[in-house]
Image (tube, rainbow, N blue to C red; front, side, top):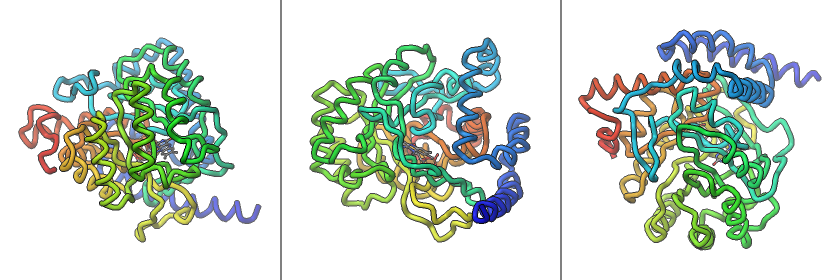
Length: 381
Ligand SMILES: Cc1cc2nc3c(=O)[nH]c(=O)nc-3n(C[C@H](O)[C@H](O)[C@H](O)COP(=O)(O)O)c2cc1C
């Protein structure tokens, strides 16, 4: 009890710092985000998973009401300069929701209504999993970061696959596929295939071999393991198929994966997942928690990975890691990303984030004389 009380005091201090710093960055541009900045200290008093559940309950309720239309009208930035065609699908804008936020594919219509241009659901595994014991999600407010060791809790591929048929959504929905916890790396290929065969209704598929929070993942990014997994998935007809990289993968290992991107003619690369590394700059009390770090501290590293990949393969790159503002998204696009995704900044900046980033992107394009997002892609690669 005493330990808990102390932790709360420290967390509150972190939150105060966040309020001082984040909003001093001049990133608040809409009444909705100002409202969220007032609400956030209250939400941050609750355990992170409780807040996450509350957000899910609210968004799921919204999906069942006619309000969804009004929300869509408010949050969606409709502008043909933001549109991209990729994987045979139309993306209304390049800002998507990263894997892990909607693990069970309950919310794609609500997330699309908040103005996101695409959603990646999952990670899903062949069987349902409860994940690691709680607490397993931690805020690092002074660093605008999260650490999670969720352990791929999800309802299982069959249930998620059924849900993909239930909703009608205007934006592409990808599915992140991961290895089941109890499956050893040797039988991982069959396990990935089993998952894929239950979620074929997805618009694209991301092989997650970079999860730092579940057993046996470290070995999956080696060339030999990946060859077997990709062979199995391609054999099952998985396409468009992308592979998601860890930000801490050393260059030779990245090169190995990229050679397979070419060999298997993969449709894309997602860069990056969370990291188990801890930059010395971290200031929040939760910085020593085990798990994958996400958010602002990984932004530069993830952008460098995007650039590294974009220089070496023709396959499209989805840039993810620390995208919080239009400037962050723009940096990843200019480094070579065709699309970007975010998770952590959604927690810190609230429901208006896609709208703000998209509006900011249009300003940046205009400032630099580009007539579309596509024209800016890779100019700094
Ligand atoms: C709570 C949480 C759960 C996540 N779950 C997954 C997952 O199931 N599969 C996956 O590939 N990435 C997962 N991620 C990683 C994100 O998709 C993303 O790659 C990472 O958080 C970096 O982006 P961000 O800085 O915008 O959060 C998760 C991230 C968080 C914070």
